[in-house]
Image 1: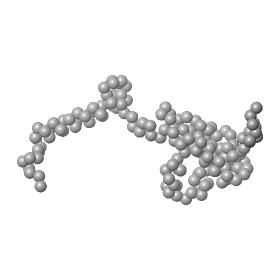
Image 2: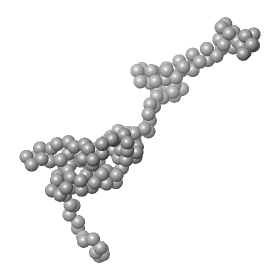
Image 3: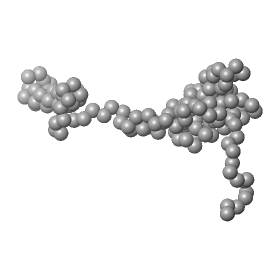
Image 4: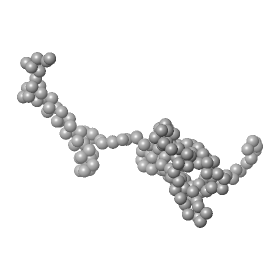
Length: 157
């Protein structure tokens, strides 16, 4: 049990000094974002507010659509299409698409699962530090075979 005489209590100079330092630091941290965002101040001595800076960059936001016989598009859930019942049971990396290559892999898997003749369209964008960058605008069918300028295995001239 601590000795009451050795523990500084209310009104003790050390306790008051700690409270003052805490309040000054807290005020300084709160004042920076307020002055920068609300008052448009560019004072280099005030802290910048960078909430979640760098988080979410590289993540691909993809929406998958199939074209019906009448030409209308219907959004599909890629997990339900692939037969996944519990999305949260998947590992974190399998739930997220982080690159164009992973998007292409997911698209190929969906095309195989949906079967031949299905028209699959993808609208995708990737998060960057400076905002969203469009990857696919959804104008072309991703399940159709791209026309190759040369046959596989042939040598280039």
